[in-house]
Length: 230
Image 1 (cartoon, rainbow, N blue to C red):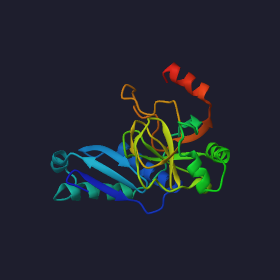
Image 2 (image 1 turned 90 degrees about the horizontal axis):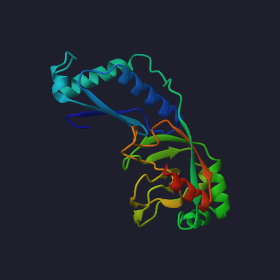
Image 3 (image 1 turned 60 degrees about the horizontal axis):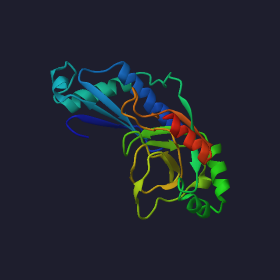
Image 4 (image 1 turned 30 degrees about the vertical axis):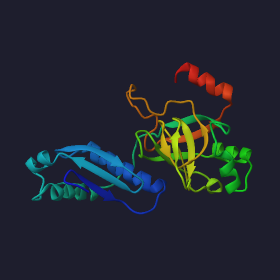
């Protein structure tokens, strides 16, 4: 990828088996780091490994250049038994106030799928979602597991300002905007939870591998969450 990173491609499918494979390999690498390893970034079908080129070159890893040394190490551990993560996935319930000012595109999603707005809410809250990756902006969680009945294309013209906490749909994915930002997802609701806070030990409320369900709340409940400062 660059003089400071290598990207490993595990396949082309996006599913739970792929997530387990990448998570397991990532855990194995982090438990057995090479000299110079800085951080890793898991994605849908890839794992990018960032390293310090100088430390790698000073290491005794086989190879002439940094890429060869790191690649050789990654291939070596790939030949060992790839294990699935033994960490128990965090399960979170995300409260969402659907429709109205919080979900201006709820009707669009309903009409695109020949559903009522209530049916969209019921289907969305009935789902069980897996966080496959964090990207786009800090803390933005890409979730798999949404029912195909809710699949809706992105907007042709992105919205200039989408409020923090907005829950959106784009294609077969659903996600939550952790901060105010432009975006092209269809916004169906908003959560009062702080999805990203630099003052927390773990700034992002969600991380790869977490499991999420959504719970519908009304305006009064939304305000109550906000008042507690969660």
